[in-house]
Image (tube, rainbow, N blue to C red; front, side, top):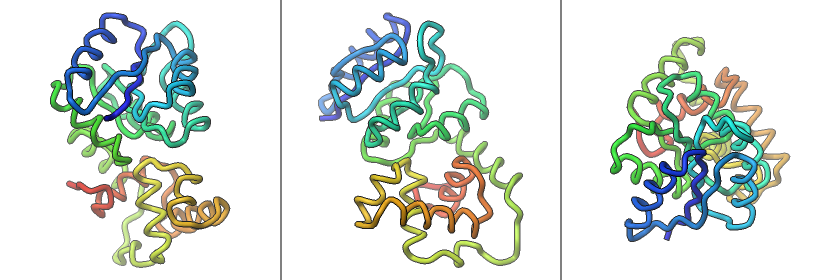
Length: 217
């Protein structure tokens, strides 16, 4: 059973999502919040598997700020950003904040359910148009060379790359690989330098290109 916390400033939206998700045999809405601060508090109390976070909440803490703070306090939670903005700027900012994915409020119900299942498993979710934009960003910002820079990475660096791209925090990666957090940070810095990557969106785009997230272009 996937435990879900809804964080949206519109009660009607929360009600509709709650009815949809609670009708799914493997999903259960454990709580609701109307703004970011309340969402963080509820998440710490309820420890959901997935937080569906509205991007724009004018009263209280907004979705991006709440995502950043929540991932620091509860790194194991997966956060799916719900937004009406089909804009790469919001997509990149959400990923950098620690979200496992973004989905439009206009998306079909089946897509939302699939996105929740994906992030609940620890993977990243990006719809096709978002994937395309990430790749365009990657191509536009990464210097292309004749050699495949992936071959420069050690096996451990490749493991760290895949886990970082999927949204895992340094502490979670350290636990999975049975290494220290400091070692994770060292591997992360080395692989970013070798791949000439500077931001998390670029890293996610690179991982997508390499098929490290379980799906690709």
